[in-house]
Image (cartoon, rainbow, N blue to C red; front, side, top):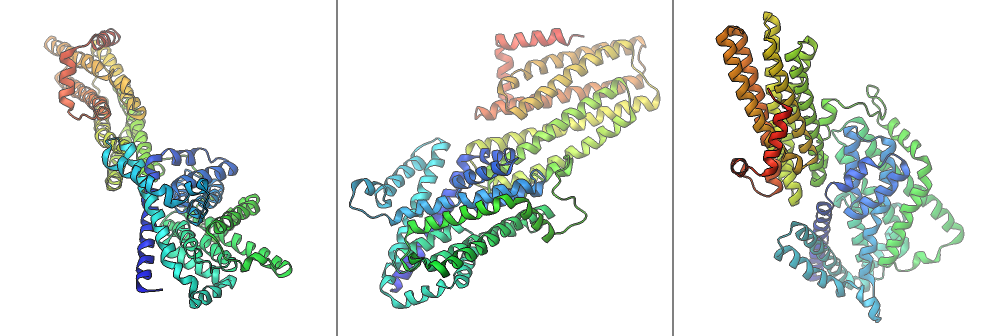
Length: 591
């Protein structure tokens, strides 16, 4: 083997690893947050978790990525350890799909039908289609598909490059003698463990092993223990991701370790005990890429089949290993502020589509809290309650925290490779988040105004209270609409906000005129009137922020970003639908 073969080997390895990385990122971006959402929501039983773990891992081509997400779920308190164990088992089976894909490089036949499935036949075609999609189409979805095809093509070219580079080793007795040493089960296991721990991908290490097997001098006696070691080595990624996490996150990582360690040694004990009596003849045969894929799948299916009934015992073992008396064992408590914000886990940043989905979940919680806070604040204007006042003040502080944490997390997410749809989601959150925060500020102002009235024994006239009640009803409706359209991304509902905002402007103008007349007639004191003015100002500004939220959603969905131009054109055009809605709102909220 010459220096040129060595260079080709490392060049092929670089292309192989790069192609796997690019393909995985493309698959994840295309899948978006849907797969992870399903993973989170539908894993309530161990069997469902097993199936979901298989499916998600087969699609994103990384058991490590699936396991890291599970660690993040457990750390955030939205998944129990009993759910995690099923998904991790499924991930071990799902990752074997990669080995089957790579085994295509070992195909060789004169049959035209078989030739179609050989990489040298279809990979160039996929590469051409990929570059056309990526370079010459405007659709982001097609560009993502192009990235997947290009990543797969680079991966297969890298695999072919490695296989070609090591082919001279078939005639090198030193290489043969070196590989035979790893037929010792423990040395082979250690070899697979170390290599996989370094590159942090069992799929990649299996691919490298398949490339070496093209030489025809690597027997199954060497391949089997190396594959067992590869399954243990892949656990390092989950262990690293659990560092700094909560106790249950560390336990989830340990579940992954225990599954693969127990499974490997159990398999070795049974297999080599049988071999001592039966003497499996195939162990001396040269391994093939397809044979490696079969062994990889058989081992992982064996582990799941044997350990699946003992999932609870493995959870208990992880719990005993990672002790923490202060924390309730695998209990998911009702979410408070810190629980919800823990959804923004840095572990999810490696899967940006899911990280964006987590941001949406937290932002929706912020919108709901803002709506609730305003409802509480406006109720104080009609009937002061000290307890509710304190809740509004606490809400405002909590919403400020939401804005800070979401904003910081979105900065991190924005630096990642995102699909066009996810970029839009981030834009909507960033634009609307500040408006919800400002609404909570005005809710606090309203609460403080009601406190001032209570402390000084002031009260409004019956007419002022009647008008204020109507105004409050309109404000509560527009804020509720804004919350709903933001959560559901409902453009049709967003188009109903501006007519209501215009009616609210009219209500505000009428309320100020009536208030001025009452001041002139002495029906309202100056001190009481100043508080009333402050309240009207806060209510009007709340409606303005609701308008911002609605217009933001409409404009970003339409790929246009001039809010003021949209509002001006909307009010100038005054469509029949717009006038009809204005009329309906005017009748509903008339003073």
